[in-house]
Image 1 (tube, rainbow, N blue to C red):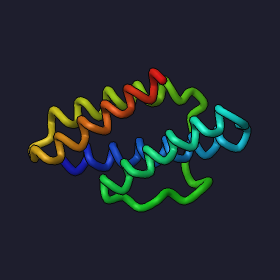
Image 2 (image 1 turned 30 degrees about the vertical axis):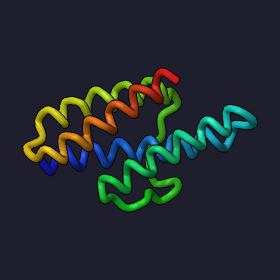
Image 3 (image 1 turned 180 degrees about the vertical axis):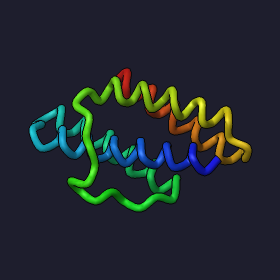
Image 4 (image 1 turned 90 degrees about the vertical axis):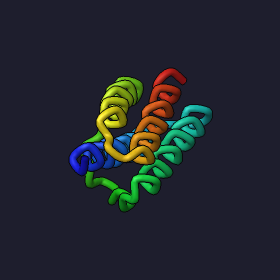
Length: 104
């Protein structure tokens, strides 16, 4: 459904913005880790055919692991509800990625 797709885009956009916010105060290994996570979500946005987020335009979250777990749950439900097989596979793949990043 279009609503599920838009929710996935909103989630990815918020995660990219949250990584951007976290990177402003990070150094060393943490900064490198955050850059990788941000790059992953930027790829997700491209896969969802969404525009790149405008810096500073999104509400951010401080607890990235919790946000990733919540997003993974929502994406898994969206994948189950998807009518199109390729949409279901993409959403499930992004959900799995969020699970891995949340536990990293």
